[in-house]
Image (tube, rainbow, N blue to C red; front, side, top):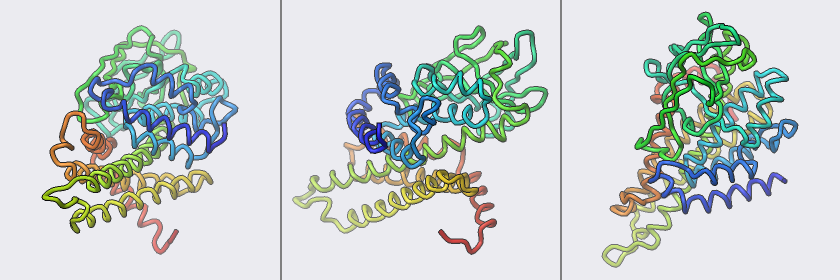
Length: 374
């Protein structure tokens, strides 16, 4: 499959998915046949190397796929995100046997994956995680609880952040092992179709070979790789969401009239759309720049991805709010697409916590690069 074919297929898939996404949102789940179709089309493994069963595409191509999915259904984009997070961590930090065992299954969708890091008392401060992995006969004994796990309700394996002898570790835990309890949750503000779940690990024994990376590197290396990959795909998903909101708003004001005057004739409306176009375009340029840096393994790629995600999430939030406002009461209806986008965009703003931690990272990055230009 060529890159252009893969992207065209993703855009077509996303276009058809938007028609169904409202129903998924109301029911709180993407249907199994849709999950299988995403996997069967290779969309879960866009950037996984071909030698491991993926399409071996560039960061930019992965980004465009996530933008297409984000403009249809954030939960659908979330499926690509979490699968990619686990695959990226195994690809970068797994040994030869782990890559051979896990990557083809993740690439094909034979194994659905989820990322389990957030805890009741830790939130986004992952260094405060208390889930433990202790040596035992047969491998490691995992004990703890994880919250808000995207696609956790239907995953076959979880990448779990834990502590081994006080050192952060990342462990692959299969969902069907004794002691794993999955608690599906629903009714959240956004991402309602993303099969979210809370997890409990009650003395779950996994083999030693399920440990990814060396003890002490679980957070700073393995989980950090997963988070960076996730941040990149979320950023692109927000670009797609923002652009979809702009298109929907422009189409609505072009056909909607009040007092015999089309909304598009109002200068304030056109000015608002102009500002939205600037925000969406700027977010896309930042994502494209991050993709370019990632493609050549530039040292600034991680920081530029933080920048892109920050800007894209804010753009999605602002443009979805404006789209709802311009649609009026119709934008607040239960089956409103812009209303769903508005709720999803709010989740994208807080998916890594408050804005301030990202701003601090970006401030530190700004201090390291005075006088530099793109």
